[in-house]
Length: 445
Image 1 (tube, rainbow, N blue to C red):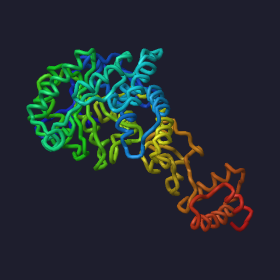
Image 2 (image 1 turned 90 degrees about the vertical axis):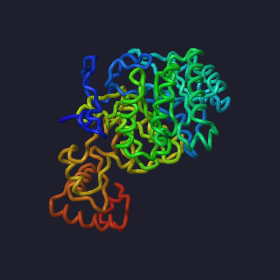
Image 3 (image 1 turned 90 degrees about the horizontal axis):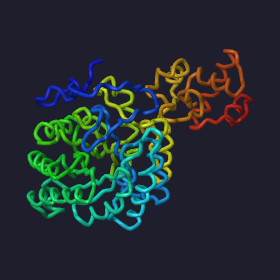
Image 4 (image 1 turned 120 degrees about the vertical axis):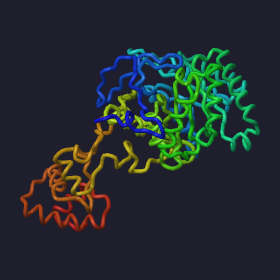
């Protein structure tokens, strides 16, 4: 099949996926739960242009969700789990926000930021900073202990934010951004990530200009933020394409995106950004974050895993997907933000089937109704085929369930039992094994 990214055009641009890669292709198993890591993330460059780096901001933006505050111990445990998962960058927090936040950033930098595994992997440790000397100093004091520290600086670039929030002119914003990036590099930061807050509502010519200035000042990664989640995928991709076509020096840095989910499009916009050439994506576990949340790590990673080779131009990540479900459960428990049952990849119903037609298909071949393997994300089923008996279940599912309980019925007996089961299921949502045994014994339930 032809790559979607190779042929999907936006405006006058014919191709979004470059075919002129000087690096030889890496052989990969896209359906293995073990990710293959990009061997070298240099200053502003990736050794493989098809590698998508995962920037996890669960501990920073994720915790900003109302009611999601976590203890330092819980955040440290999540950071350890994110390292096990294999994320490329862990954004731990905002060091200037409080002493507790600073202490956590420093601890993660010291412990996790120096824990190199047998393959040489160690995550970059990142902290957020406003474009002020005070924030940057605080970030350096906390992050400098990591093997590979990264500072994530930002400033708003939309006219609305500059006028009402910053009370600064465009010229003042550019000078602040340029001088503070230069200051961060002077302290010793080799990885300086600069984000344009509210970029999707900013004047494009101004966006090109400020990016050029911060790149000249030393920024190694530029992040385009859809801060209020207002873009549709085609216009977001067009913005990325326009930035790449009109910004001097953009080819010398890593391009990243940060998408919010206010219209339910954070995952779609992030994927559109990847198609347009983005190679670093901001995500959170379970998609938690401000307001409606952020792009979901599990959705982005599994989309790349299952469709990256076929329609996304061969992109891949280094995530060990077998830890996704465990990590999701940990974040759900510690944040207190309960998942909707139908949440993609990690919801309680993601690998569960109650419809008779679907159950029959699953019993014959799992591929009939499951595109993603439950084992790939570390999900352990309560039953072999994920079948949940209910009022829409069919005879085949009931028969298999009875076999699991140790009962074998002739077809006529099964038919009689099936209609009694249907009557029971009409009035009860959750059918237990005891309910079924009582039904067999013809007891009143």
